[in-house]
Length: 384
Ligand code: SF4
Image (cartoon, rainbow, N blue to C red; front, side, top):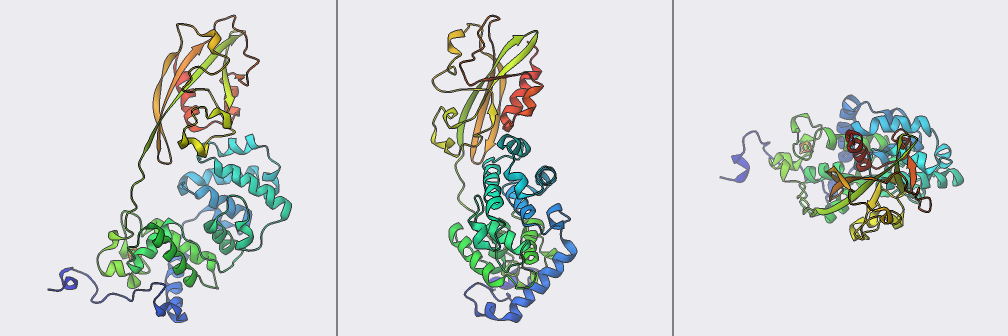
């Protein structure tokens, strides 16, 4: 018995495999068929998202940067707050970096906020780019983001490929190439298929299909507008595509922080420091990305022990553990431990150091990475 007849409910024949090398893709009526099916589905099924109510390139740019590595539901309130605070690239360009980081706080991957800020300065000076090549010169804007802004906001026939598009492509054409080759093939496929009319809607429709129907762990083929075109579906092998990427090994890190406290007029004040390149004292290669540079933290204890300026006041009674937790950044798993360090009443104010002394009420005004906010919770819970 042939393999084909053993599966129940399978179509009698595979659709054409529309890969980039298939001449069928050169025929406009073949491409038009894809466009008609997917755009009609998009028109009636697209999610109502705030960045879909605008064609402002700046707003689309902000949304695309925020959506990198971050879920739609998380991004929505950040996008709305951001546009209220910085409605234009000019407004963002003139903002203070602390204000920018504070508004990004909780969204993670802070390098995105810094690059967006740098990009806004460039755009404020040179004007909004008018094509994809111009956008790719803007800091933080790669091929995908340039394609998204130029197709969605500028209505240019520019392709894009993200993880969703890559998966849809892989299943439609049953392409089991390994990661790098698959990405290259998906880009070629997207270049051929992006239409002259409604290119932004087409690109968004492909991504929407991947996000809501052709999902990583499940393909809801009975809801898919392209089911008649899909080779993986015809073969009953949807989840075989794309070929899984080799797992990135988790890197374990230990971060130790001291919540250094002194009392002034009965009010506890806490030492915080701005995270700069020199703050990455451990110098571990994993930290080359400098996830939180420019933000604020309690005092980080490096392998050399107590932070400089504090060691002279070391007391046998400290540090006292406040607790620990784990925090994930990319493929890093950080065990964060925090300890309370009470300085003796008469201790100098460490004014020779770069520390800033703040009350718990003031600390919220500083841009803090997520682990620091968790340390604050631990410190507030501690009643010593
Ligand atoms: S038919 Fe199924 S596997 Fe194919 S693209 Fe649609 S949802 Fe994905």
